[in-house]
Amino acid sequence: MPRVEPPPAGTRLRWMDPITALLLTIAAVSAAFLWAGNQNRSR
Image 1 (cartoon, rainbow, N blue to C red):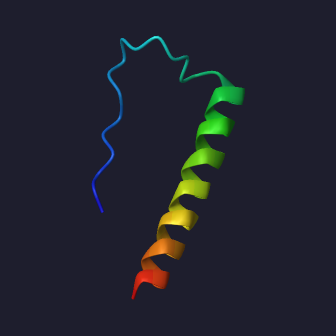
Image 2: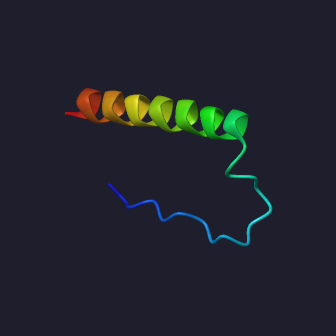
Image 3: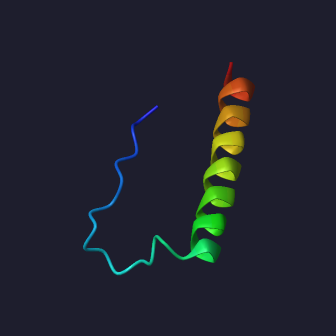
């Protein structure tokens, strides 16, 4: 599984925005579950 590097502090995204942080967290969790499901199905 490739490591995800955090973006530099100079990006335009507002990482301190609580709504953006919440959406990013939900997206990350969803992606992790989908990735795990695909890995389990392939075996």
